[in-house]
Image (cartoon, rainbow, N blue to C red; front, side):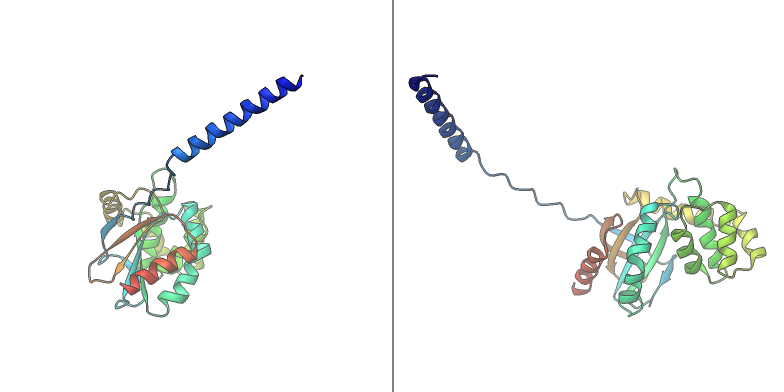
Length: 221
């Protein structure tokens, strides 16, 4: 390569660089769009099992599927801290709604089992055990869990083998569908009211810090 050829290449590269710099300056900077605020919905609370004080200032409703691995993640990584820091201190009422998803074979049976345990005052004990044991919710396993929380097994089996709570579970499912809730876990957080709360809808097993921030926002409003 001659000196003249080298100078020509260098000049061409400089021209290309200048062109690119002008293009960069002429292109407006792109900013990330502001995320849309979570949808606000109204959720019935009067017919549901609740944990915590009825006069707690805020209420959280969870739509849950007992066989959903993300529901299990929420309950194994977040729920106990929420209970200790907010429910047990009187700041939060926690409510459970059923949303058994059709692609989980044992979800409906587990939802029915929780309500049958509620007849004997053991709803939350069995609910927590079922969610934390979501990898095995066969009827045989559910019987074992029910026995483990001290249920009268004759009464439990009679209830579990019936369609006694089918309509109540379907009411939760219908409400979820009407609110556009299709996945679990989904949460609604709002100021406590007698029969219904209104608040933002959040989907997924987010970390504890996320829920704590949302609860503090609700308490401040």
